[in-house]
Image 1 (spheres, rainbow, N blue to C red):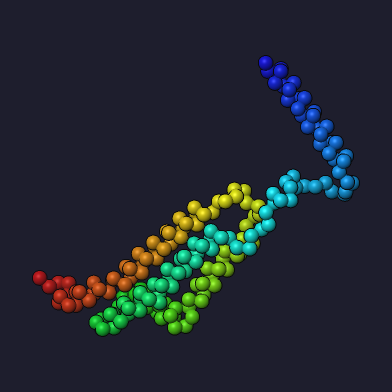
Image 2: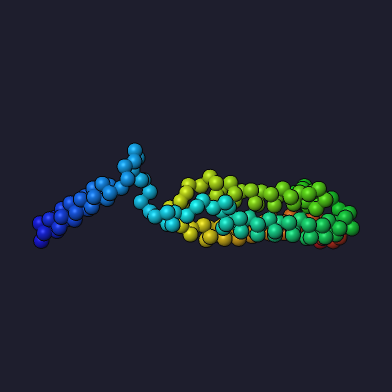
Length: 175
């Protein structure tokens, strides 16, 4: 049985070799043989933008813009009304929010959200080893970044309320 399989393999490899030689003989004479074995319709052009990454970054930039332009300024008014000293990290979040809303800081974030996917599409090897991959990873990373951003902003905006409640109640050592 083993000899039969080997002989069949030899026959197929001889046939394949003779077919390849015949095809090469029929091909027009060129200095270099054609290297791409696929038809021209099977090779897709390189995309201009990495769509999964662009979708994720635009979603992240949208949530970040909404937080910095709509949510954080409301907390700044509340903190100003109480007049207490704010933690340093909360002050930095308020400064970023002001820069974002008044000094076109949002333009930097949106420019990065659109420039990074273009750069990735230009720099990554083409064609990809696994076509269609990227959506799952992009969605996971986007959800993770948005979750971390929301938790961080929430924690930094809630931190001053601890100080405010302590000052209203008379201090942490009151019994």
